[in-house]
Image 1: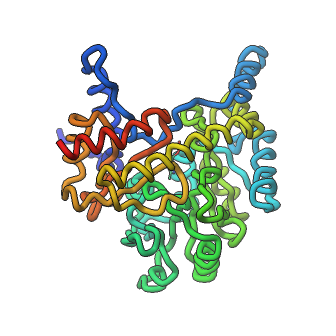
Image 2 (image 1 turned 30 degrees about the vertical axis):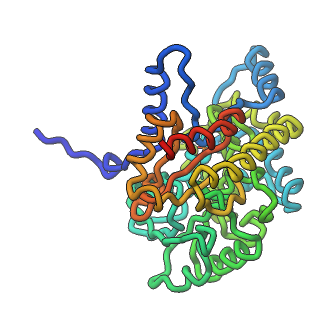
Length: 389
Ligand SMILES: Cc1ncc(COP(=O)(O)O)c(C=O)c1O
């Protein structure tokens, strides 16, 4: 008998996860005393949760109080703290009623997509893009519409590109800073896109997971400031260094609050209780987190100086996040083979561009610089030697 498999069974891999596995295997096979693998493939801060978050989690675990389900939208103390963050960070008054705490940003996407779109709906996004956007939409029966973007638009969508779409899409996903390019949309461009989407009935989903990590070239702004219909996604994984705690959030427009709540009740019940307590405490750990951010800034400066000397001369505007998107078309037309050889020859793990752009990605690769600062200092020298040899 042949059993049927569903649309979700066709989801392509998230290639970076395969690169991580290859780098782990290579590291495990290294002879004793050999120089280690420099990990530049993964978008995970090298340091864990800030101290205040750990203390809060420890106290909660030891208090004897049951850590059970919370309300589907999360603990009110966390929702209120996130709402206050909008006031503190963007000067925007936001009601805690609009905040839905989720299982990471990853858990927010299916909730947002299912509440906002139907099967068959077309959702636009810039290419290169964070692969799960397209893979989740496809698994849900929706259709990603890829807008090829390049250096000239900072790898970001423009109003002109959107206006050319016929028919108009049902939705648009933007990310600023974005993954993989690390580029940002200036506030006036995000505002124009958000207003256009609202006017045209195109649901805007703004992934703001890298907010807090921008480097002064472009000002951070939230889509919620420009549109009452935008859905904002964010997470404690990046600035707050809490990937494994699996806490993210949605800032919802009024019309999607109840639909998302019903979906969240059914799909997740709630995000992990203890992690919610830790996340609320992390929001008061500014000093420690700013010190880590200063470390990424130093790594970024080292790489922006050293990579061009090593031969990686074409790097996208490094406005934010902790990624450098390099055009390596002068070195290879097979980024996957190139990164595999780089892992073997230079002991450096990076992610091939095909993960993020299936058509043009074979001439790009992404370096992540949120790992150990010493590794970032060492990388350009190793790369130069490898490319020369
Ligand atoms: C752009 C972007 N959005 C969402 C996520 C998922 O983050 P989370 O750990 O909150 O699920 C990532 C993770 O790398 C990301 O880069």
